[in-house]
Length: 345
Image 1 (cartoon, one colour):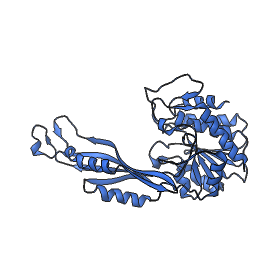
Image 2 (cartoon, rainbow, N blue to C red):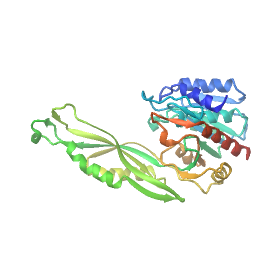
Image 3 (cartoon, helix red, strand yellow):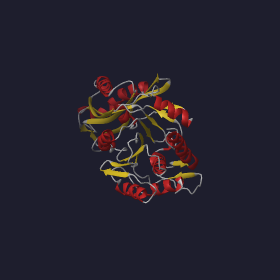
Image 4 (tube, rainbow, N blue to C red):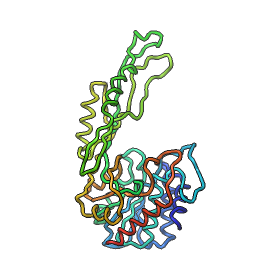
């Protein structure tokens, strides 16, 4: 099946985080009915597919879930592009993985996992990683997240924290009887505006550390001064830091504004440019090298000391957008580059 048509079939299957069984069924049936002659391992975390070879040491990795469908999603018939929710993030990458897997490269392990777009604690790769560690001697991994055809190295760490700013409730007609916590937001917003972006060069790559607010809630009625207001502080920290350092920084920085509670966190990953596996992939694909300005599951492979790169079709700036699309030529280019790399080994 042509890569664009396979991508379209995958997009047609809704697979919002927590509802991935249908797309896993499609992947399993596709492999059973194709030229793939290897083993399919399936559990609640997703699917691992591989050939029965002791040389299966290169992982191709992709998540099968998407963010919720946007009712304003653009759908256009265009032979040069594939439109739809998940086209970029990351069903074009899944199509590439399936095509490579059915091309009889016996040194690969394909990992199709669930729940990447949801809370990190539910990530399906957590359930598959013990199998990857015990059954395979992985030496390298390609995470097929959208990179616009670039090799994107490393990734930022991530912390989400709840900041509760307390006040005192009262009737809105008598605000002097209470203390409005919403009016205290200016100090927090001011600090974030001044410190939102901090640039650092790591291994010659420019990463941007980010502090921002992603949600805000407070109040119960139009005529009541709220007793508190809550903000989610999202901190994308540098791969040279660890979770402990990042969470301590948030706690120390925001404690003066209110009560700070860490909700979840995950380490990032260094670029690992000294790895020969990474160097070989860059050389053979000929792709431009940039930093990954986000968190990806490359971090999980980094924790296991497995060199890895982010490389896949689609512009990440279009991910989750109502006009999400991927260029057909880029899907083909990603497939051909990975095949070229695999043929070199």
